Image (cartoon, rainbow, N blue to C red):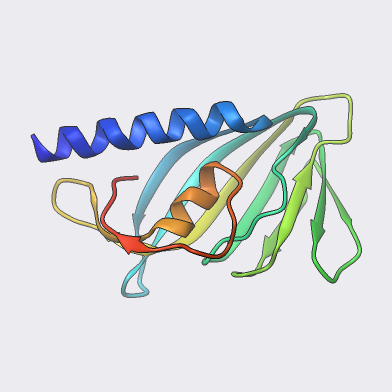
Length: 153
């Protein structure tokens, strides 16, 4: 019952965050523990409509994105904007404030891999997770004021 409740809360939160996005949709494809204790990888399908943007945000873990279709302009604070085209990838370090925008006329499709704090327990829920890492996967958020706690992914 506890797992069902946590899952419903998470789904409601995720749906609200997805609706708030500007033409950005992220869908978790897979997640799993990695060899670094206390960390896990989350693989996400990313779609951004023409003109869509993630808004400036950050993650507490590293992000790697591979563009399948379309092109993306990625702006990382302190760096020149970079155009990432189909067949190319970009790595965004943990803590880097960035924005991704589809300035093209075609929808963008990409695969993102996020290395976040957390580790799955026996029923597939995160035993402990950095809420900033998870919220950052689904929506814009302020990099300050994040708290630790147990929530599902």
